[in-house]
Length: 180
Image 1 (cartoon, rainbow, N blue to C red):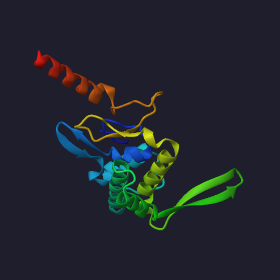
Image 2 (image 1 turned 30 degrees about the horizontal axis):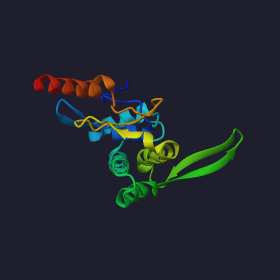
Image 3 (image 1 turned 180 degrees about the vertical axis):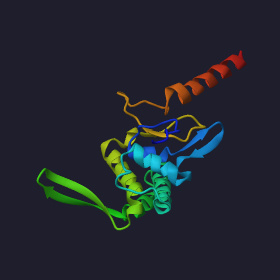
Image 4 (image 1 turned 135 degrees about the vertical axis):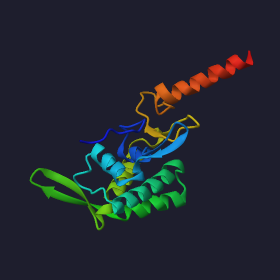
């Protein structure tokens, strides 16, 4: 049996979901990747548990990839952030093959412990190719979550309208009533 995912925002693309393994709850910071069990859960959620092992080496390298990814997402175009993401990408490659089923691409790693983090950083590259302006951080000042804006007009501001969006509305309402 797999434990339930405690994070407030799930279902984002792999790269952003890796970033969302850190979140704020009840005024404190939480981190799903504090333990190998948290990594095991994250791997299972993404169907990566059949390819990668949730051991200490993989946990360490996945955290390193998350830090590099956070820098790249939060500071687009920053040479140091790009270099950190590139350093993670150096640990894997894509091998193209022609199989009986047709063309196929497989990822390969000299050290499989880099696999989950590398896969997440590579997913970020795909998001950048598709719609870089749709990669967003939640607009709520106390929130650290990220999302890929799939709204029709591309104006989503909150990780969740029910939580962060509602808190912002309540704060504005409270401020207006205090002014009266």
